[in-house]
Length: 229
Image (cartoon, rainbow, N blue to C red):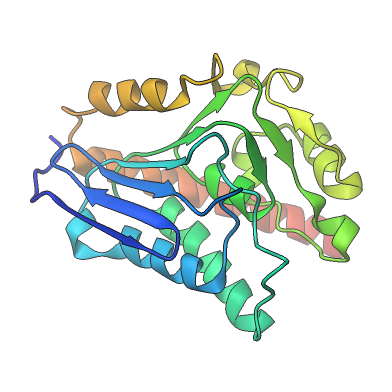
């Protein structure tokens, strides 16, 4: 069963965090589009790996009507290597969290925001959610590993190679296991997933997640090997 824990809450650098008995909730809240700063990345990763989070389910969402526009290019990092390291740390923290992770996405989900959302175990997308990976138009080679968890390769190519924006409904992502919902209901649908999982034992859940990561890592190594030939 999901372990219980004390209720506590905090806010820092555009990230609202609450540790409840049923789940850890992280809400991106940096108007107007919840774009990440370096400080925000650090706080986000720390909130997930904090002992207070334990192995309870993790629910990630954005406020009010957008998940995240990715990294804030209007506030570029003074050290790009540190920013890249923190971004990867956020992705790893979501993927390696021992409990169930659910991302509830409304509105735009762009760049790093999309990588974080697709790092969750369960992805809940509003039908009108707009997915975009504009890094190539900015001269940046984007990561694709998290995208491969949910998106077909043909759509990844359109997103990453030409920066084409696409809606969740247009991509018909419900056919590949993404939970599509009506606009404005992503949080509610994600909470239903958390509630349904409340009696799942975290030990077998964690083992299954480790096996899935091992399979994904093996697939990534095989793909890298093919590209190097």
